Every structure is written in structure tokens, then in C-alpha cells.
Length: 257
Image (cartoon, rainbow, N blue to C red; front, side):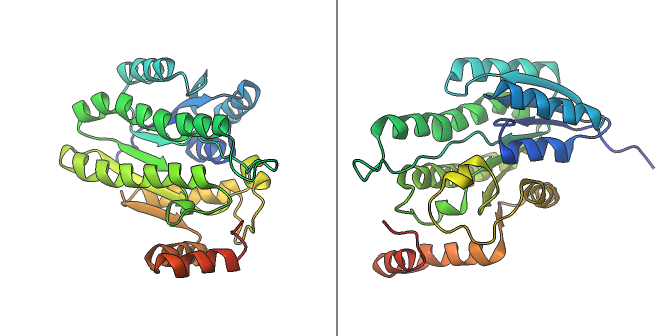
């Protein structure tokens, strides 16, 4: 029996909860982890944890809003060795401004730069290498909020819906070239972002559990990974209901204004 193939995994937002858990999930002897994060102290802690598990780790502290630096880092790593799996995970959320009752424009602009523009820049930088090797897997970390916009998080919902649509389109575009694209749509996962969210948080998962599920399902190259089931099903239902009814349901369960 041949030894399992050594895997190279790139993760943006590796200093966050899901990103850090994904890094530790893939950290094993023979694996190479390429980790990006904005919180350098947290990023280095994750890197050391992964090295202790036997992985080779190269960590890069940078802000994904610096898209030129982001693309340069990815291109350099791809030239060094083929990237097998990439998690486009870096993201932020906004809170409603108590004074105005809506989101501050500066926060919205920042969110779109991180959640949308940086994510698309990451994918674009990965494509030359993956298309040349006719292989690789890109996982875009979206959210169940992509199904129907939540009044508590308008721009976040919009950004995750954009990633969902983009991932679905890119999957169809790249399938013939052997490059897989999967949209990952988690529900509530323990994190500072989750703790800042003011609405109900049913079926809350810890990051390690989410990472295990993502890794297991991603091996089958699915179009979508969404969890947990009860919240996933309920979120999907809101997307297919008439809009007026969906809005009433959203308000009834505590996600309204």
C-alpha cells in the first residue's frame, strides 16, 4: 500500500476561530500549512500548535485588504509548491450602530473589502497554479446567512450571499479543468464574531467540530457544505418562502430589528 499523499493547505484568516481550527485539523506529519492571519500573536500560536502536531508551517501576517500583498504571497507560495486545498476564510462582521440604527458606512466598506474583494482576489491568485496542475480544491467560507438577509447583519449577509453565488459559478466554470470549488455555509460557531452577534444563536458548534465536519465532507468535492441540519433547513426555507412571509418568520424568531 502506498503512503498517503502529502497535502499542502492554504488558509486565510487562520488567526480566527474556524481558520485556526481548520489549521489544527489538517496539521499532521507530511502536511504543509500556509497560514495567513491579521492577529500575529494568535497566528504564531496556531502555527506552533500545528508544528507540534508534525506539520510544516509557513505563517504570513498580513491584512487581506492589502490585496497586492495578499496576491503576491499566494503567488510565491504556489510557485514554491502546488497548493492542494485552499480555504478562503478571512472575514469580519458588522454591528448596527446604536446611534443611527443602521450600519456605519466605514464599517460596511471595510467588510466588503475583507469579505468580498479579498476573497475574490485570493481565488484569482490561486487559479493559475491550480489550473496548470489541473487539480486542487477551493473552499469558500460563506454562511447560512447567505440564504436570506438578516436585518441584524445586512452587509454581512450580502457579502456571504456574494461568496455563495461566486462559488457556485466558479464551480461550474472550473469543473472541466479538474479544480473543485465548494461553498461552506456554517451556522453559529464559537468565536468573538459570534459572541458579538446580538440575535439568537441556536445549535452553536465549537470550532473543532466544524473543522472536522468540513474536512470530512470536503473530501468528496461537494458543491456545498452546510450545517447544522436544523438551522440549515430553516435557513433554506426562508429563501424559498414568499418574501413577505419570510420577513415575518425572521422577525418572529428574533432576527428582526
